[in-house]
Structure formats: C-alpha cells, structure tokens
Amino acid sequence: MSQSWQNIGVSIVIPTYKRPDDVVRALKSVETQAAEHDLCEIVVVDNDPKHSAKEAVEAFIRQGSADVTFVHEPNPGVSNARNTALNHAKGRFIAFLDDDMEACPGWLSGLLKSAKDYQAGLVFGPVKAVMPVEENTYFAYMSGAFDRIPYEDNGYIDKGVATGGCLADRQSATFPTPVFDPALNQTGGEDDVFFRYLMRRGVKAYWTNEAKCLEHVPEKRAKLSYVWKRNFAFGQGPTQEAADKGVNGLPGVLYWMAVGSAQSLFSLPGLVFYSLTGSPKRVRSLVKLSQGIGKIFWMSAFNPKLYGN
Image (cartoon, rainbow, N blue to C red):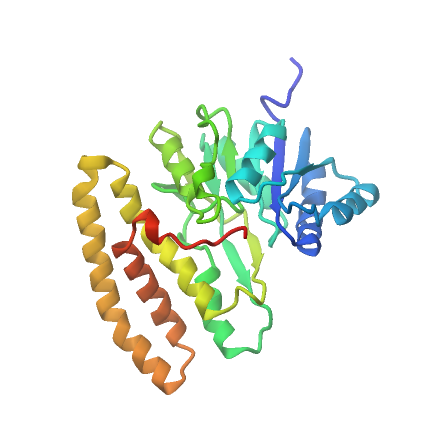
C-alpha cells in the first residue's frame, strides 16, 4: 500500500507579516527536521499586502533543500493567513510555527510521536521567550509573560494552549469552515475557538516536553503596554469560553468574573508598591492585574487588537 499525503504527510505552516529576516530564521530551524520525514512540506504565507517576505523566502528556496511553497495572502489578519496556508497544505498533520519562533531540534518529531502514540489530534509543547537583550533587568521578569509553559509533565490536557508550535491532525475530526474565524483577525483568540471546536467533538489534546520552541520577542513588543494587552486578552479567554455556552454558561461567566475581581484586588497593591519603588517586579503584578481585569471585561467590545494594522 503506497503512502500518501492524506495518511502520513506533514505540512509545516509559517504565516509571516512584515518580518522577512525572522521568517528565514524560522525556516532554517525546520529545514533539517522536514528532511527527516517522508512527504513533508513547508508552506509560508506572506500576509503583508506588499509581500515584503517574498524576496527573502525565494532566496531561501533557491539555496535550501526543503520543499517550500510561498503563498501571498494580501488581506492582513492572523486568521486569513492561517486559513490560506491550510488551503495550500497537502499534509494530514499540520505543524504551526509563527514567524517570530524558532523550532528547537526534535520539535517536529516530538509532535508527531505524541500524536501517533497517544492518538492525539492536538499536540502542544513548551515555548520559551528570548528577549531582545539579556542585561535588561525588566526583561528578566518580562520573559515569563511571553513563555508558554503551562504544564510540567507530559500527558493529556483539557484545553488548548496556542497555535504557534502546535500540531493538528486533520484525520482527528472534520475541521470547521473556515478553520480560523476571520472575525478574530486582529484581536486573536481564533486558536482558542478552533481548539474548543475540536475538543468538544472528542479530539484529544496532549502536552509533550519533547517539542520545544523559542519565541524571539521583538523590541517593540518588549514593553509594558504590550504585556498588558497580551495578558488582558489571555484573561478574557475563560470568561468568553463560558459565555459561548449561552445560558448554560452563565454560572461560569459569573465565576470567572468573580475570580478576575479577586485577582485584580490582590494584585493592584503590589503593582502600586513596585511602581513607586521602581522595582522590575511590577511586571509580574501587571500581568496578574491585566489578566484579572480581562476576566471582568471579557466582552468583544473590549478585545485588544494584537495583530495586523
């Protein structure tokens, strides 16, 4: 029986937006890993209307050995970019990598092994932040706000983590159409909606420490204002998930709003104290406060715009 893209194929999907140098770094990190697997391709989607990554990616294609497809999606938006990538991807297994990420050795193998060994339709691994400079005291505290390491041990998990660095098995369930909601192009959260959709249909999610990635935080994001927006959006997640259940989710909405109120109340004094004393520890208090307030103001009218223009 001949193998095909539908039963063993792997597509590594890398959306990019105005980061030509970063996307080349991401490509280099998976080039060798892709070659280790039969029927493995890389799909790069340039989401900049001016296709700023085209020249850099085409130069990589000419010099490299990986099977790379370059696609231009001129309509900015994180959902648009990923949906366009999936329309071109041939593989059964979709491995997502963001353009500011770098896959560590063994990342792809770790994802695939977990998917196959544990019949998991979704697999997630740790993402460690790399700040612009190491000697900045604030960055030492800020890096934790960008890390995505919610679990210590390998095993099944009851909710998704993030699209960047994860793997999805197209055979696990029928994906929604479109896969990622375009209404969330600028605010984010499209991955949470996608994960919940699959898991409500019985898809298993698995966490493995054997599939590590790095996230290179650009200087323009290594600021307290962005940390606030990012964590405010994270805080909105659980309340919004409860609200999506309609009337049945009302107890959950009230619960998470109460949690957010308590979280905000307890973190505010620390933020004030550390701010007055000039301590970098205020970053941690800011994270807790922003997540708490996000749980309270979870409605779409308050969604921060994190992507695109």
